[in-house]
Length: 156
Image (cartoon, rainbow, N blue to C red; front, side, top):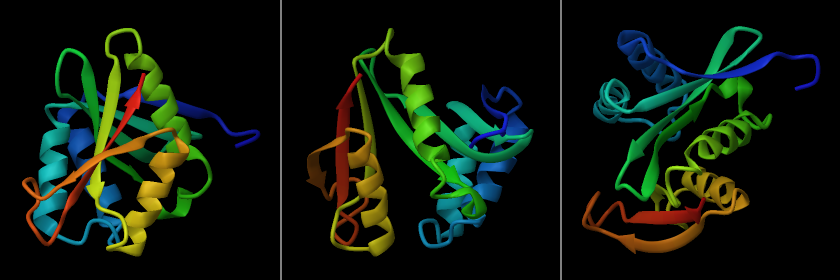
């Protein structure tokens, strides 16, 4: 990231953030293959805080934050364009955004497909573990028996 200008902003333009979220998710078919899910995340970005990371004024990723209680937030959705993945942008985005919530919240959580079921989601789990998230539990009540949901948590 040397000699690059990296910025993270809280996007306020509802249409722009929804459009960008959809664009990024379309670029990540190994994680987001269902159109309905991509549209849902884009729609939710309109009501939740959505942070966008850019490199030299080119938007490359986003993070949607949902407040789940007065004490906790959820990383509702995170996506980095394929061309910019594995370069540290996701880690930077998560770290910077979580820092913004440290004074107002005590915990962060993320939900993902349970480990051992999909190699791409196993990468996601490894990413969150590298950021200090720990497995809280796996439940089937959210996404059904075929898609057990792992909830990971981190103290802020």
